[in-house]
Amino acid sequence: MNTRLASLNFIPLILLWRGEIDQAIARSRAVFAAAQELGDAYTLSHVFHLNCWLNQHLGDSTTVRERAEAAMKLTAEHGFSLWEMDAAFWRGWALAAAGEVTTGAAQMRSAIAAKKGLGVVNQVPFLLGLLADICIQAGDPTEARDLLTEALRIVDRTQERWFEAELHRLRAEALLASSPCDSAEAEASLSHALAESAINGP
Image 1: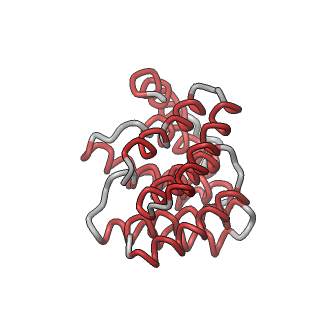
Image 2: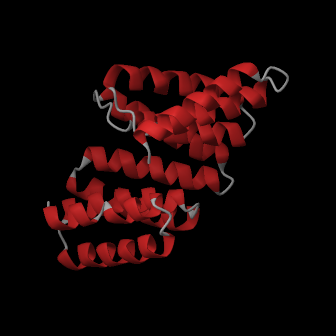
Image 3: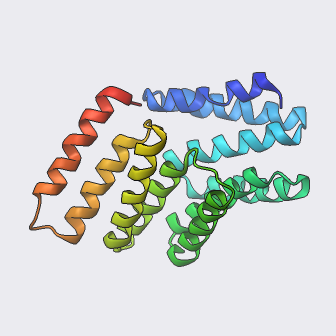
């Protein structure tokens, strides 16, 4: 992997989390173009993953699907199984976000299961959170709550806490969607989300 491009690939996300959206998009395009010009398949796989991540944050399901499908082809050709699972997850998210919820959510679940089957836990709470969000939007808060419970258990075990605040926020949303008259637990989750955000960001 080209470590310079790999490192630069994180800057667009940092800019996005700081609210500098135009700069994030511009930097992302520059890194993507540089990775394509370099032609190193492993570096490009990494760039594809973070490019999908950025565009998911922006709600651009069309770009995520295009990037994910290209990444799936590239990673399958070169046997990069973990990157291929990530690409499949992003394609699933893009499908679900564009309205193909059943097909998309199934692909997201399959990708998460494949990663866990290999013993991978890094970023799994994040992926579970995105799937939970899809479930909430699709009117299935019960499954969302189960997914978020699993995600938070992994966080407690691994101490990978950078996405914990959002997991608690999503849990509050799922609780309100399933039991709108019982807001005490949802309020507690929101308070926890605010506390974790102050500590861990982004």
